[in-house]
Length: 399
Image (tube, rainbow, N blue to C red; front, side, top):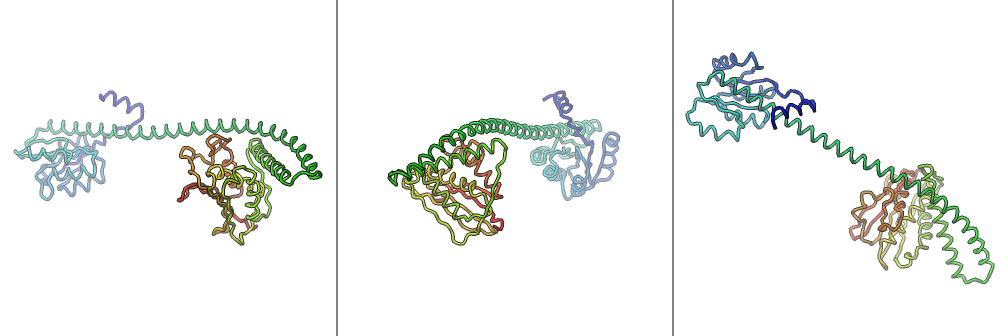
C-alpha cells in the first residue's frame, strides 16, 4: 500500500493523525541526554529518563512514538528496556545507541525487542534526526493500519447485523402476508364448516331417536367433536390474523380438567389408539385462572405432535405437577426421533412445521402466544432416553 493510498483511506474514513510526536530519551549520563534533547526538542515533544525502570514508568503515562535508548546502562540495558517496552507498548518504535563493535549479539535481539534501528556511536545528528523521523512515520503507519482494520471489523459487524435485520424484516413481511391469507381462508372455511355442522347436528339428533348402533353413534359423536376442535382452531387463527392478538376468557379451572379435555379431544386422532398414552397428574394441584378452551387447545396440539412423532406401540406421557413459586407445570413427552436441527431455533415461530411440511406450522406458534398471554412460558428439550419433552409452566394467579 502506497502512502497516497493510505492517505486516501485516512481521509475517507476520518482516521485522525496517529503521530503523537513524543520521543523518550533514555541514558544514564545526563550530558548525553542534554545533547540528544538539543537536537530534537524543536520538532518533538521530548521526555527523558536516566534508567530503564524510570523509562518504563514514563512510557505508561505519556504519548510516545519513539524511544531512543543507550544500550550500556546499569541495571537494565537498552535492548532489555525495549524488549519489556515492546511487551507493554508494541505500537512504540525503539532505537538503540551503542558503541559495541560486536553488532551480531545486538542484532539477535531485534525480534525479541522489536528494535526499529541501531545507531553506532559516535552518531551524526542528521542521522539521528532522520532515524527518529523514520521510526515515527513507521509507527504512525502501523497505528493507522490497525485503526483501519478495527474500523473495517466494526463496519463488517454492522453490515452483518443490518443484513440479519433486513432478512428478519423480509421474513416478517412474508409471515404477515401469509397470516393475512390464512385469516381470509380460515374465515371462509369456518363459515362453510358451520353450515355443515348444522346438518350433522340434525343427523346426530335423528340417530339418537332411531335404532342406530352405539358404536356408530360414538364414531359420529367423536367426528363431530373433531370438527368442533377444527372450528376452534380456525377461529383462533382468524382472530389472530384479523386483530393481531388473542382475547382471553379466564375462569377458575383445575389443571386435571384441562388434561382430561385435551386427552378426550386427542382420542379422535387415529394414531391415539396405536400409541401407549398415559397421564400422570399430581394430587392437590392449585387451580388456575386461565382460558380453559385456549389452553386445552395448546395441550391438544402438543399431544398430537407427540402422537405423530412417536412410532407405533411407543409411549406418550402427559403430566401435570406443581412447581415452586405458585406455578403449575404441564409436560408432554414422546419417544420419537427428537426435533430436527433445522427447525429447532425457530420452533415457536410461525410456519415452522414439526411434521415435515405436513401442516401450516402455526400450532406451536399459537401455543406460545396463548401461553405468554397467560404470563407463562413454553419450552422444548431433548430427553436423555430419546424423544422430546415439551413443558408449559403457568402461574396460578391466586385462582
